[in-house]
Image (cartoon, rainbow over all chains, first blue to last red; front, side, top):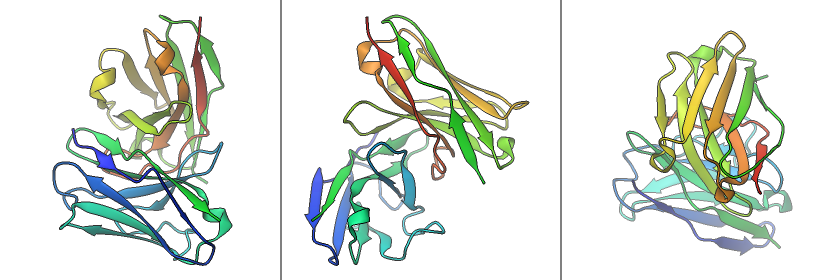
Length: 110
Length: 118
C-alpha cells in the first residue's frame, strides 16, 4: 500500500490564497485520480474536488485541484479565502485494491 | 435527492459484534457501490472497504480482513457493515458513502458512532 502525506495544518487570512499538498509515497500520482474532501466539525465529509481537478456542482470556483508528476503530489488551492472555508481537508486516491486517505489538513482562516 | 441514512449509535463491549446499516434513496441502488470509512475520535479518515451493490463483490482493507463483512439487501436498498471481535480502538464514527474504490465517495451518510467499552 502507498501513503498520502499532507501537512497537519495551514493557516491564512481571509481573502488570501492557500494551497494544501498531498504527496504519494509510491506509485505515480498521475496513475489514479485524486479526490479532495472537506469536513467541518461534527459533519460528514463532502467532495470539493474529484478526478484531480473536477468541481462538483455547488462547489465555488475558488476551489481548484491539480497534480504535479515531478513531485508526485496533488494540490488543493482555495482562493479568496472565507471564514466558512475553515475545516479539515482530506485527499484520497487508490490503487487496484485499496482506497487511501491522506492524514488530513486543518485549515484555519484567521 | 441522493441520500444515505445510517442507523443509530451503538455501545458494545470488547469482543462483541456490531452491525451498522445504511439505507440509500434517490438513485438506482444497484448502479453504484457502497464504501465504508471510519474515523476514530480526533483522528483522520480510514477506508474500510467497499461492496458492489450490483453483484455483492467486496474488497476489504487488509487490516480488517477476517473481522469485517459488508453486505447489501437490494430489496430495501440497504447496505450493512458488520465488525466482529470489537476492541477499544474500534471506537469511531462509521460512515457509508456511495462509491467504489476508483470513484469519488459522494454522498456520505450522517455517520454512526460506535463506542467499545467495558
